[in-house]
Amino acid sequence: MCGFLTAISTKEIDENKFNEISLLSKHIEHRGPDDFFYYRDSIFVSFFYRLAIRDFSTKSRQPIESKNCRYILCFNGEIYNTEKEFKNSDTLYVLKILEKKGINGLNELRGMFSICIYDKKTKLIHLIRDHLGIKPLFFVSSEKTIGSKYENFFFICSEQKPLINLPFKKSIDEYQAIRYLKMGVSFDQKDTFFEHIKQIEPGTIFTINLENLNYSSVKLNKNLINLDLKSNFKFKSKHHSKFLKNIIKEHIISDSPVCSTISGGIDSTYVSTAIANVQEQECDAFTIKSNIFESEIKNDSDLYRVKNLKINTINCELENLSKNINNMVDNLSSPFASASWIFQDQLFNKISRKYNYKVLLVGEGADEIYSGYKRLVYPYLFCLEIENKLNEFEEIKSKFSEFLNLPIENINKNYLLFKNNLLKETDYEDQNYEYFFKSKLRVPMERYYPGIKSKECMKNINPETFYKSHLLNYIKRSDVPSSLYILDIISMKYGIELRVPFLDISLLEKVLEFSYKEHFKNGYNKNILREVSYLTPKSILENKVKKQRPCSTSKIMYDHLAKEFEELLNSENPLLENKKILDSFLLSKAKREEESSSIWFRIYTYLVFYNKFFSK
Image 1: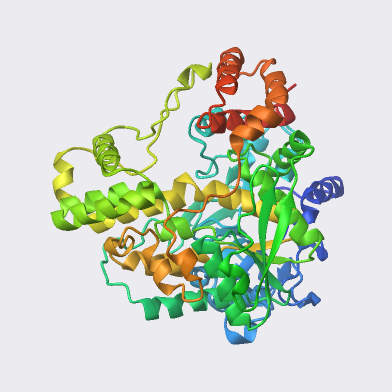
Image 2 (image 1 turned 45 degrees about the vertical axis):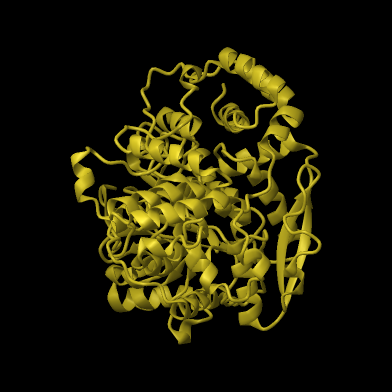
């Protein structure tokens, strides 16, 4: 994995601007500590920082020119479906595809990638981002540079920081800021928190004409919009086990040692035990503990008896908490909604600095594709009801009681609320903070899950499509986009290539082929993944309680950040009614309210972000 900054112009890029852009690129040098190279001609310049994972030689040095001298390639990420002869260099494989089949050939790629291709023959720049948006790719278009010293320039980068530091006025995108503050969502649309910075959308080929810097885009042939949701094949554990094991094999191809994170839940345990099994040698798996939460894995856990699995516990500190959050906001160039990222940042730091790993596999994505979330119970029940499977409906409902830790009467109440919300504009339950906003810009509460337009439409619902659209909504909007962005930035900060095997487009396609009924069995979530987790200890497989990422937001906000938060709220902010927020926070703090602590943390990191990047 790597990082690049590219600039193109309709006029010749003089030496002064070349040197200035070179200095801007230093903001991403942490992404590629192993090598640096650049390519330039009169209207194009690209600076590339390489983290060498496959092929430590200079054969894969980038920017790289094709043999026919037509293409200049900058490629960040990993390709998992390379031909055998290119196993040690996916960069050379991408170049071969280009030379043989042109831009359309890139539809064949499967992996995580952000790519910039300069076609010197057609005078076109092509930007391509992977199907699920695992690797970020940002740009500043020529419309945004009008009136500046970089008028008629177009900038492209793996991170936002160089683009933020371009010499023209920064403005906050109020719409995205309010969406984040209200709903905690970010990086799921083309817009960012900065008005002048946009991102290439997942599964897109974005093309720029060098003559006038006009641009257009098309979707990759395979993308999140055209996936088949109607299939209802029966799940066969042996077939899926083989398929998933091959996904892991592809994701551990590396000339550098591979490790994993492990929480004691099904997802990360599958990844860690599969690596140990496939490699047939010891796999380091890392878990965390802190003085505000216990270790994720107990000392008597059966995981300590899994062959070739070595569990390392990393102690995460709360010292210098506000300073660490400031640094994270600076690195992310954005606020972040969950306090658990503070500990992930420390974990990645120690995996890199203490244990010297450069490749890390994580379990993100399994909750989304294998139905790990508790609230998915209700669309599942709804599908059984519209299929008139009333006996199954009642039977599974009683089994959900343990998984949800709720009596059946509460499940019935929540299910009725779910059905009533289907016809509403929003299904967000917490809408009590509207009075916190002073902006006149109307940002409506969106839907967390897909809704239904009318009661008449309910008669024509396909249960397969309905249920699976909920899974896709997590991947396209709710949780995955912001998590992927944060994971990329905080891992690359420490020179770690982070891989997410459960977010492989071919795996997503495969799981969507199975009937929705395969997702919950006998009151268990993640039924499909449980059935193929042959190496996972029985004590974990039979545990219905979902493992949460360790954190205690209420302790962090009320015991560690309260003073700093109150100081931040004493200053003015153009979007927020800080006095009202302060009064409400002090009340919550006095009551030690757990539920409201997440909104306080969201606002806290937003104020840190605003003051850092926009305060005069």
